[in-house]
Image (cartoon, rainbow, N blue to C red; front, side, top):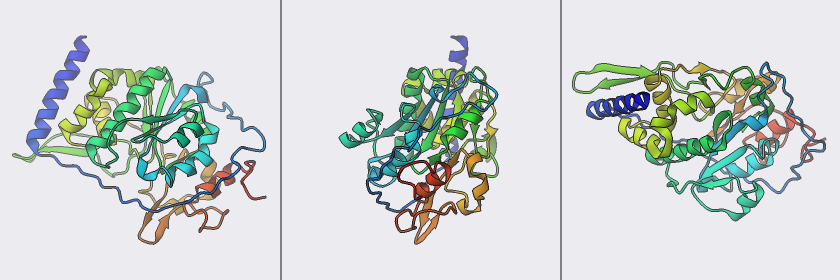
Length: 322
């Protein structure tokens, strides 16, 4: 109880400082593009087995809570690609957090679409609203790992499992990849004095939090408190996660370079390393796509390259060319 009280006092103090400092840290989504995926035979020809190849044999796919943040704006573009590809390898472990009701997707995911009742806007408050629901649902699940991804991520499920097997969920782990070259620095506006700095794992690449660490976040992040943190420090959802973990709880981010976001040049990833990566992404700027360089389907049919990537990694799926 004393620890919880101390955390709440710290939160209130830091929130007041940042508010007085006039800190702004706004991100705008620049990803665009519309993809239509026809009905494909999505089942694998043979069952895909997720091998336990890591050090911690007590961790399996069923111990991971995979959350995907999405929105009604992409329910007919981004979401179908996920449902056709990597979701098929983790159907029981993956949950989609959206802002609308869609009976078709509820049926396709066996009820794993969660209407957060948050706005479909990409504003900070509404993104934090979804992250808050994701975190609370993870706590309720009893799973050992909380792994968040965006709806423009491809997740290499077997690799995710094998990497998490290297870490103990009963210890405090914050795994991910940064999208900036130096930590976030918060200054007091009146004096331009540095108040504190911290790293965060970009949500666009995905990140994982052990249950031990997630439970330590509970006094300041559960039950909607996470939204209050976002509003108090005026930072986006993934940055606020880093604020809680690195600044408030004093737990360092562990860099895992196998996470990838659309902020990188996807074409620089060599195909021979694809099986070693955890996540991939894509983006479209004007008429140019930032995608992995992988052979497969025609780019007019598969502009994101996720269908081709899936067949590269798991060629036994029925829709893959032979």
